[in-house]
Image 1 (cartoon, helix red, strand yellow):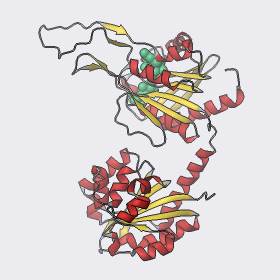
Image 2: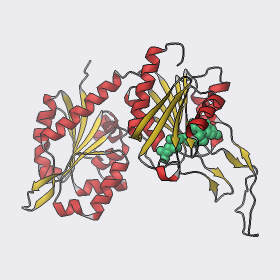
Image 3: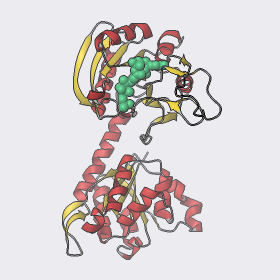
Amino acid sequence: MNNKQRVLLIISGGIAAYKSLDLIRELNRLNISIRCILTENAGKFVTPLSLTALSKDKVYQDLFSVSDENTMGHIQLSRNTDLVLVAPATANIIAKMSCGIADDLATTTLLATDKPVIIAPSMNVRMWNHASTQTNISTLLKRGIKIIGPEDGEMACGEFGLGRMSDIEKISATLNNFFKIKTNKAAGKLKGRKVVVTGGPTHEAIDPIRYITNHSSGKQGFAIARALHEQGATTTLITGPTQIPDPPGICVKHITTAEEMLQSCLDCLPADIVICAAAVSDWRIKNQYSEKIKKQDETLSLELMENPDILATIARTQKNRPNLVIGFAAETQNLLENATIKLDKKGCDWILANNVSKETGVFGGDTNQIKFISKNKIEEWPILSKEAIGKKLTKRIIAFLKDHKNGKD
Ligand code: PMT
C-alpha cells in the first residue's frame, strides 16, 4: 500500500512560480507525493512538461477539459489529497479565495475542497500591504487557512519589503511538520474514543425578531474539540450560533436553542466522554410571540420557563451514561462554593469553574482561568489561553482513561 502523504500543489501566476520545481523536488525527497494544478497565468512562468517530469503525474489546467473531468474532475482533485498548498499565492488568487470566486480549475478546486489549505503568498510589497489584501488574509486566517510568509527582502521588481515567497526549506518544513502532527493524530491517545463537546451560546426566541442569549463566543468549546481531535478522538462539536468557522476534521452540528442542543447531544450517545462547555440559556420564553411585539406600554413583562439541563440529563438520566461527563461552571461570585454545588447537583464527574465577571474577559476573550473540581480534588490552573486549556483538559482525560479503566476519581 502506498502510504505517502499527498499534496495538491496549486501554482498561481507570480514570478515565484519558477520555484515550484525546486519545491516539488524537495517534497519528493520528503516522500510526499505531489499533484499540480497550474493556473493560466502560472503557465507563463513554468511549463506543464517540467512539472509533469518532476511530479511524475499529469498536470491539471483546464476546468472544462472533457478528458480530465471524466477521469479526475475538480471535486476529485480537491478530495484525493491530504493537503492543498497554494504556492505561490498571488494577491489575485488570495482575493478570489476570500470571496469564494470559482472561475477556473484552481479556484473551483479550492472552493470544493474539504482538506486543510496552506498558502505561501508572493507579491509586490505594496500589493501585500494593501488594505484589500490584508482584509483577505485575515478572512482566510479566520477560516483556518494557514499562511507561510511572506518574507522581507528584495523583490523581482526591484523594490524592498514584505512580499517574497518563503524559502523552499521553510515551506517544506511546514508541510513536514503538518504531516508529523497528522501522523501523531492517527496514533493519538484518544484514537477509538467518541467524544461530544458543546460550545457557544443558545438563542431563545422572544418573537420572530428578538431573542435571549449571552456573551459566549464559542472559543472555549471549539478549542477543547480541536485538542481532543488532535489526539485522535472521533469528535462531535454541538454549537450554538458563533462566528467561528467549522474546524476541519470535526463533525460540527449547528443548533440554535437549548432544546435543540439537548436533542443533538442525546442523538450522539453513546459516547465515551461528554464535555458541556456551552453557555446554555437557563430559560426560554414560555409563550413565544409569533409576530413582532409592538411597542405599547413603557414596560413589557415576559414570562420565562426553565430550559432542560443538558449536563444533568446526560449525567443523571441516561442508561448509556458516558464514562466521563464534564461540565463548566460560569460564576460571578463564590466560584468554588457554587461550582461544587453544581458538580453535585448535576451529577457530573468534573467541573471546570471559571469566573465570568466582566473584568476577567473570559466571555469572548482568548484566555481563561480554571479551578478544576472533581469529587475529591480541587486544582487551580493558571491563566491560560483557551487553546492551552483544551490541551490541558485533554491530557487529564487521557490520564484518567489510563488510570481508571472502570472507576472514577
Ligand atoms: O464561549 P467563550 O466565549 O469561549 O466562553 C467560555 C465560557 C465562559 C462560555 C465557558 O468557559 C463556560 O463557562 N461554559 C459554561 C457556561 C454556563 O452555562 O455555565 P453554568 O454555570 O450556567 O452551567 C453549568 C453547566 O451546565 C455548564 O457545563 C453548562 O453547559 C451546563 N448547562 C447549563 C444550563 C442548561 N440548561 N444546560 C446545561 O447543560
